[in-house]
Amino acid sequence: MRFALGWVAALVMLFGQAGAALAQTPSQVIFGPVSVKLPSSSLFSFSNSFNLPASVTGPYLLRVKLSAPNSLTSLSFKLNNVQVLSLADFAGGKTQVDRTVTVMTKNSFSLQLAGKTGTVITITVFATPNLPKPTSLTPDPLVVTFGASRTLTATLSPTPTAAGSLSVSSANSTVATVPASVSFASGQTSVPIPVTTRAVGSAVITASANGGQASATVNVMPAPPTVASLAPATLSLIQGSSGALTVTISAAQTTNTTVSVATSAAGVATVPLSVIVPAGAVGAPIAVNAVAPGAVQITASLNNTSATASVQVTLPPPPVISGQSPKDETLPGGSTPQISAQYRGVGSSIDVNRVKLLFDGLDVTSQATVTDSAIAYQVTKPLSDATHAVTLTVADLAGGSATQTWSFLVDDPAPNFYSETPRDIFLAVRNPRIRVLLSGFNIVPSSIRITLDGNDVTAQADVATDRIIFTPVSPLGDGLHAVNVVATDARGVTAGKQWSFTVELPPPPSTTEDGVRTDDPFIPEVRVLP
Image 1 (spheres, rainbow, N blue to C red):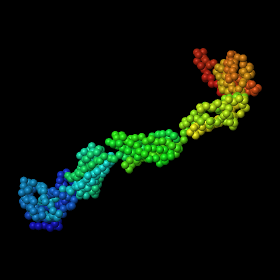
Image 2 (cartoon, helix red, strand yellow; image 1 turned 180 degrees about the horizontal axis):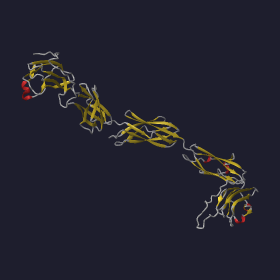
Image 3 (cartoon, helix red, strand yellow; image 1 turned 90 degrees about the vertical axis):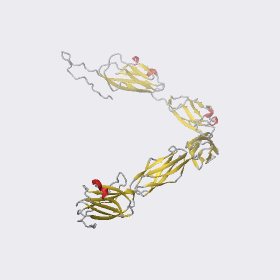
């Protein structure tokens, strides 16, 4: 009895989802699983068809599975009119039989069997996934210059339906290296493989995946020398001097290498037309002669490569002037100082004939002593109280020059007392050291006086033209004490100063009969005195 596929009462067809690829092949489901339930114990016939997907390949596996226990009394399974299973294949109570079969693009099968009513027969056909494999590795050969990195391209077929990776290896990793694996995406048929050179020679690169592989030869050739650098990038020279740049090539050669050299302005700096980098070396100096002030570009060229450096030529530095005297100071009235300075040439010697000294705007060079390192002019008439200006100009044989202007003051200031101590403070001592400093010109020593609380104590003080120091012999009483000082210079100009301080000792503490203090510690009152 034959049942049509649509007779639900006679059979139940259950279609399952194809699962993940099995660990062994064939693993991809291309038909089923389809289940049929025997409606009775009579002979039952079932047929169906399926097409072969383009994404799979052989071998192919047919799986027929029975629900337990095995109650079959008859079975015949034909695929494309070829019998592939019979009742004997299920002998011994087997409930599942796997059979490798031949599958065509379009397929049909028929199943006849008999057994216990309700027995379920499940049919599944598996194929081997047609995974992508590298079919070529190009270019072959790959010719690359040592030191460079290039790329091989692996072509995959069929087109990947999922992401994966290629295993890549080099037969000679001392010559060329590749990554151990390179990933590819779903739908990607061209996979770039980076190749890094390590030495001159040949290496076979192999890419493999899913049982397929492709190879290509990489030939690493010696690199022709190139200009790697010209250093320093900027060279500063003084007019008339010489310097050097260094050209470096990419790799040492077995023979001498000639590098061409050029200057953009021979009127500023000159260089040789070429230099030789000796065999086994990677660098050579390039002599540069500074001709005139300006900027110039120096270029080193080799095998269509070049490097440049900038040369800046400047005038020699001007002479340096130092040791000016007197400078930024005050001299007493009527002074007749010697005006002097030292100088030196930096890029050239001093031109003595071009040294010029102005004093208060007047050229006094002819009255000065001039050498190649110093000048000195003696003022012969007493100077007036005023600010006096000096200008010195020095030139060298290269044409450089320097000018310095400075000044000094001639004046007789009045006597000045300063840094007095103690002042405006409380003291807890009765014999304080009183001191004040004194400045001025031609102070008359006998005019220097000091009084304490209106009493002249000059005779007991240490008196000099730059200070007064006095320490009272008798203890001072508590209270405010005033100090007054005065001095006169030779012109009769008198100046003085007055200040004060306070002496106040704490009272003795009050105690009980057993010696315990009964009052608070003494805290003196602090006042600011006028």
